[in-house]
Amino acid sequence: MNVIDRRTFLKTVPAIAAVGGVRAQSPADTAPFGQDYPHLDAQTTGQWWEKPASTVPQIIDMNVPRDRVVAFALYIHDAGVLKMTAQLYPLLPNERREAWLEIQRDGAWKEVARAPVEYPGWSAHFRVDRWDGTKPARYRVRHGEKASFEGTVRRDPLDADEIVVASLGCNSSRTKGARPEIVQRLLRQDPDLLFFSGDQTYHHTEHTAGWIEFGLQYRELIRDRPTVCIPDDHDVGHGNLWGEEGAHSTHSGGADGGYFFPAAYVNMVQRAQAWHLPDPVDPAPVRQGINVYFTRLRIGGVDFAVLEDRKFKTGPMNAIPPMGPRPDHITDERYDPKAIDLPGLQLLGERQLRFLRDWTQDWTGAETKCVISQTAFCGAVHMHGKPDNRLLADLDCNGWPQRGRNEALREIRRARAIHLCGDQHLAATVKHGIDEHGDGPYAFTSPALVNTIYARWWHPKDERAGENRVQGNPLPWTGDYLDGLGNRISMMAYANPEDLEDEKKRADGYAVVRFKKKTGQVIFECWPRFSQGEQFPGWPITVRSEDNDGRRAVAWLPELVIEGAARPVVQVIAEAGGEILYTVRVRGNRFQPHVYSQGSFMIKVGRNRPDAVSLIGLKASATQDAAGTRKIEL
Image 1 (cartoon, rainbow, N blue to C red):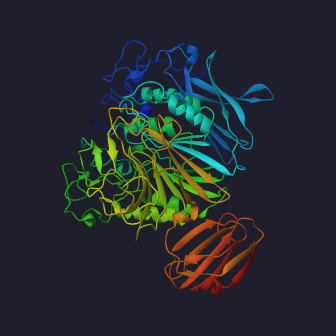
Image 2 (image 1 turned 180 degrees about the horizontal axis):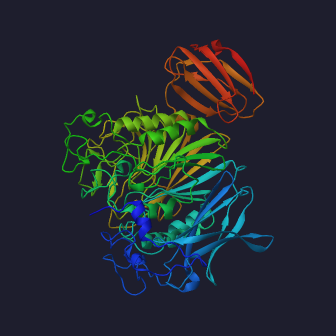
Image 3 (image 1 turned 120 degrees about the horizontal axis):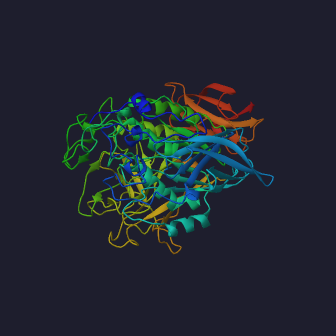
């Protein structure tokens, strides 16, 4: 198959006519991704209203009454900018390909933005600058004479002590219909942010139809609260994805690295799911013209780094020695994990690592920090697909390549951030270890919303608890372990399926994370889909933000007494190698930095970045009392 590049794609799609945003149907519309890909999005392209052109069974009815063509909308606002994506059903040839956004002010509706309806994909995208995030606002997206979709743009809850995040993913398309038990409970729990970590749809070649199906299932949640959606492998048509910076994949399993389908299809998926995120921090496309979206987002003083942990990752095929029946599966227990941790292999890629380094040092609008991405930075899984299929390691997780994993975790640790993700179809809370067990951040992998595709289990072969098992936890296999890639992890809790044939025992569900800003506590909750009020065994789990850096303090620097700022930012740097040990926003105006070795250190202090005052040549003391005190004026 030939890959259509972005320039060729743009030439194949007629420009929107200048008059009234109307575009007529044309022959090019029947193959918007090129003649080699006529099957992509066939249920919503071409003459979609006449007959199914797809090999996939009809997902939902696309020919809805014309007053219902606006299916749903997603929004985010941050730093004075509101961005919203409206998803429409496919339009007929004589309908305007234009939608507009209205805000209710003083009891009247006022238009604030107008946008074309993009084809393929049928999404419209609105940007409103100088948005006042301190006030809620009713909105409605309109199309034509009668179609509209209404909701509320929430105010930024900066004054709330608790910020609640719902973490959701893996929404199996094998189970059709509504998700009332999830939606109704989450409406009661009322999260401040929804985070969909990927695999919103598993329809692979029919993203738009599958995406509309997803939106209908969750729109009562989405319409009234900020929502992050990041596409994962199934969203772009893969079982597994190693993006290889946008290369083209030709291997049936994708293990050679890259994307099966043209950039136009990948960009359509990302546009639908992620355009409404804050602007990407480094927007240059990768190969084939595939766009990026990694960025930062602040909600109520919680600062989220949104990562793309698939896009830059190296494919394992021909990059490492084969260790199993597939390039990405390791079954030989005699193998040396170092044999596949080779120089040059990428995980996040240098661009995202640069972003993380800057993000950890910039605390503007932030009280605490959190990283969100698609999958876990470890292989906290033993059984794959069925309970008798044991794998030593799966290279689809972010536990490989190990050097890239450790680089990422060191950056996350510097800000004492937690990590939220999905993908693994197995709920798990772990504490990462980098150089020793427990010295890294906490991470919470949410369960699959609907766990009918490739379930997984945590089940150590010797069926023994690890060292430092979690006291009082009813689960038998907690404590310190090495995953199949040799990575150190401390298992805090896991939710294995009991019976895949019983939907109430498949371990379907979602995660809720509560950030307590005053105390720095973070509470992990794990809710079964059909819960009657109980969480999965082993949860809830409460940790402190400072515990995300688990290195042992061996020495102390002078206690800082900081005047002129209520909660300043403090950074500690080892002068010998220039390593930033951590950058944190402190509680109050007194803070005594600890360090992890003897030597000479630098402290930087500022209001939002450590850029106002520097203290150099500070010698570490073995005890807190001996370190003394230093006064700083900001």
